[in-house]
Image 1 (tube, rainbow, N blue to C red):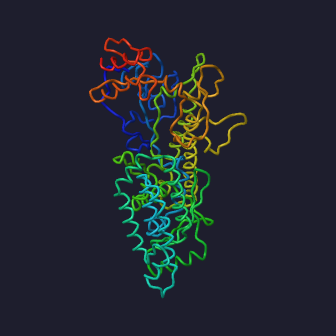
Image 2: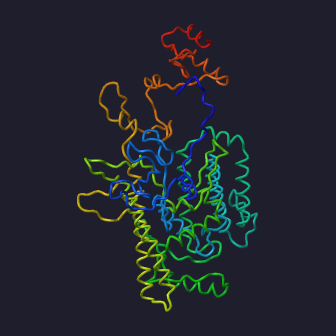
Image 3: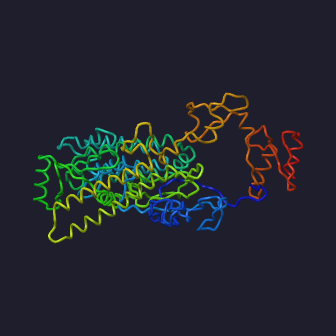
Length: 528
């Protein structure tokens, strides 16, 4: 870093999110379609995982995309088109909870609008750091329940005397919560205090409790609070299959009567032995409809916002639960192993090859199923056999995607003594890093031994440094017209007073060590 040239930009915030399919296609330079890595001569195949467009395969080669050599080419992403939406194994539990909490008829959460308003207000207040205001809404709900449990001959004034706040109707409750939230957000002093004293761990703990209560209410609500329909239960099998169960006789009789009286509930068909397999297309369609109708609360549940950066807000989309396009890392991050004259592929390529082969099988069986369904006359037995093969290929493709991201989600058994190829999660969970490799567990002199212990004064994202190290660890700060006062004061403070400086680098690249200078000399250096 050249500290004589100041940096003209500043990082305000950093956020993490998932690439959408369109974004992956934009950053990709090549679609990977060939599961074969090398040809007969040992050269990378076109459209394969070692395609020259992704970067040089050997040190003597040139990149086909940027025309740089092995040392200067940064590498380029490719992508694999998944023929059918695959579930994202990282969010499969959340997807399963959403399907259990939504109504299959109106595609909304199954709780009433009054409760929905309460949870929406709580999550909104928590996004702005207003914890006390968010928790106080639970007391309002309690008072609202007391009002509804009152006798019919009691007047509104009598109910108001029973509790501090008794509301007679759901409309009054919704209006009250809405006004309460607006007043809390309009309080500039409270928002300023929340932004300054913002604690990530405290906010996350309260937010998790609110989300847990919200999902619990939705899942346990047997009848929808909006259309009053009874949705069939949903069952999961591992992290790859979802099934919809048929209603029991009592609930089915209720739905039949409601259908006769209103005619607004459609009939769900295709149950075999009391259940039916939900294809990823159906699941994606249902989740998409939920995000369209409940966009506000889904963004609060799965979006992100920091009260310290009010302009930052990321709207959640249903794409996060599915993988339609899979990004392929550049070649340099999947280097092959060479032993003598033989070349062995990276373990990650084994998983990507399985996804490519599974995608080809899904496409083939899909075409066969379509052709068998269009034959005249239709051979029902042939259609049934082809459909079963198609479903099996979908499940196998899902297992391959799960293994690529998290190998523990793959139920496939391997030979005794062999391990599954590590997925992305296993690669990230390795004990790597500066502290892990160089500081933790070192019982030698001049090494900072790290200790894992709770500290109420620091966040989980922060780390405590011993004073002897904190006074030695430094970073260069260029002097500009905007920070000259702060830099001058840091030089005057010296290395023993915070915020202070340890060295001053002059324009001729010479360095003044402030610890060796007197206080008067430090003052002189601050003005030079």
